[in-house]
Image (tube, rainbow, N blue to C red; front, side):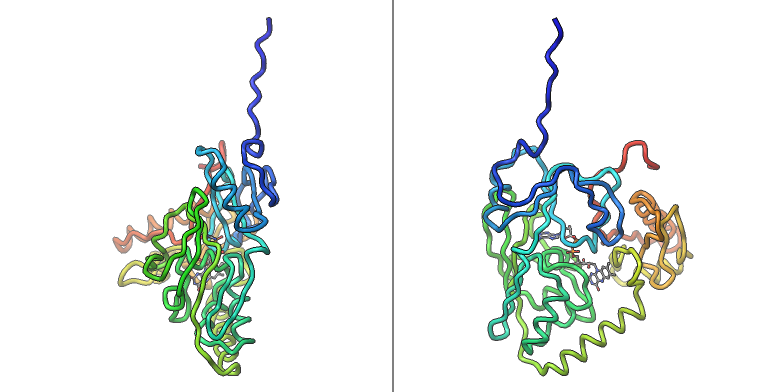
Length: 311
Ligand SMILES: Cc1cc2nc3c(=O)[nH]c(=O)nc-3n(C[C@H](O)[C@H](O)[C@H](O)COP(=O)(O)OP(=O)(O)OC[C@H]3O[C@@H](n4cnc5c(N)ncnc54)[C@H](O)[C@@H]3O)c2cc1C
């Protein structure tokens, strides 16, 4: 008698009933700034906050959940991301201004928040025009630019924990530090409440224009990049250490250390995630040899390396 074949149900069939869009084996390369990386085992775009809570409350305990914004600080590895990848869509992208308090959904683009503030005559959030991510990513990373960071403007945030329970966090509860916050890694931000102040629209527009032109001058903006690769170590600038270690323009496969800003890695065309990660590790090694400083990754590397790929 032949043994009965064991059929493993697809992950989608193990998830609770959901109203949002589920996609199996969803390629992620197009969803990140680097343009590299494998697929999500399942990609989920929740219909709304209750739908996201239903996923978190009802998924099997062994299924990991990873949330991504617009992938401007992410290196997705070539073997993809096991489990469910959550990407928040339009239902989480609202922006509302009442007096000078701004409530923004976690999927709202930082640049759109800055633009809405400009229209409403709200000053203090211009720095967001220099960060190409979402509000959720900005909270997680305590994103900052040109002298301000999320820590300086956040009043409160809302997040779902790994079981789908809703939490309201004040500034102290967010525990912001340099490019990080202390909220548990499996919590998903759904919105933020930010504080601005009444300002003259012409002056706000001028500050946004100044930020734009400073970025144009210093960052490789029209390339596939992930922003600053390494955090600035205390007392140092990462780019200076990288430059002194002779890494400007260094290449591996299709990956290269930017000539324009050497704390940026770029995908020159055909890079794999492994090319970029290995180049980053080579930079860390050379910087340590030349300066004794160990650089720490600021870019979040997620997922698994490709089997049989260049390891
Ligand atoms: C050209 C360029 C310039 C940049 N300049 C700056 C800069 O000046 N200052 C700066 O701070 N950063 C900068 N960055 C980095 C990046 O834009 C920020 O870190 C941004 O906040 C990331 O947002 P994101 O939506 O792209 O998040 P992703 O890159 O998609 O994710 C980053 C992290 O946030 C987590 N995350 C995303 N959404 C949520 C959510 N809803 N809830 C919980 N966690 C979440 C992810 O799990 C991941 O750990 C730059 C990047 C590029 C490509």
